[in-house]
Image (cartoon, rainbow, N blue to C red; front, side, top):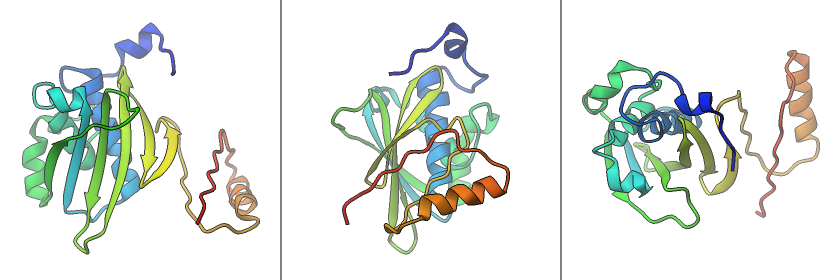
Length: 185
């Protein structure tokens, strides 16, 4: 697990009473939204551990809704995110769940689309508004969303990583970290 210094714990300017239950929750939902894309009309928030126990009192509900609407942790609109979701035509449910081997501040965010398809992201708020994304639609991952991140899912073919690396190099970008996950078909 990552260790934090005093300035990490003091953290950023946030809306709400808790860096883990509000700012971290916003960040998880915001990263999940960026991965899932737009066009969803219903979201299920499966809350684990302390997220499930205190989501209304700590404002985690408003924070998660704010994140899926694209609000940043310091956005004043988070306080009224439930109203903003209604205006946007997005419905939602909060559902307690027990997840195996999960941090106590973990949420599975399931995006549902009008065509009946769904997509989910699992993330944890690990303290001081820091997060960790651990699963994308059934694929185990580990990243924080702090740095620019590219996600590629493709059928196995030789040269794909070289192609992507060369394309980034040609545009003057450097790869800080690369994680590849090969799944059995």
